[in-house]
Amino acid sequence: MWAWINDSSLESYLKSPKFAPHPSQWIEGDNLIIIDIQLPHPIHKQLKELLSIKNILKRNGVKNIYYRNPEQEFKLYHW
Image 1 (cartoon, rainbow, N blue to C red):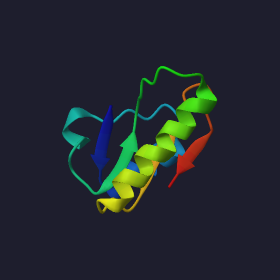
Image 2 (image 1 turned 90 degrees about the vertical axis):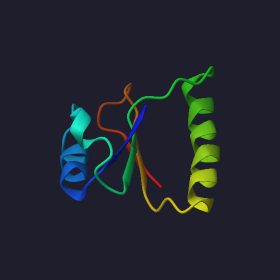
Image 3 (image 1 turned 135 degrees about the horizontal axis):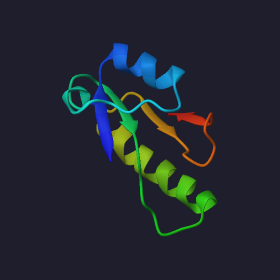
Image 4 (image 1 turned 90 degrees about the horizontal axis):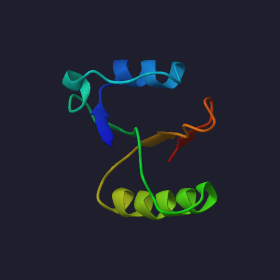
């Protein structure tokens, strides 16, 4: 699950580990956040898969990607 949020919503996401965008916020900006992802691997392999996905997205024009690991409340990844 992902959302394209505006800068204001991104600021809320970056400040609050519990941030959940309202449905009206899901396609209102150009900041991609990955809210939830299901990969059939342990967490260390999931991060490797995310890096692979990141490379594909970056090649297609995505500037910033954010992901918060739900198992580590304050761990935020930014590519």
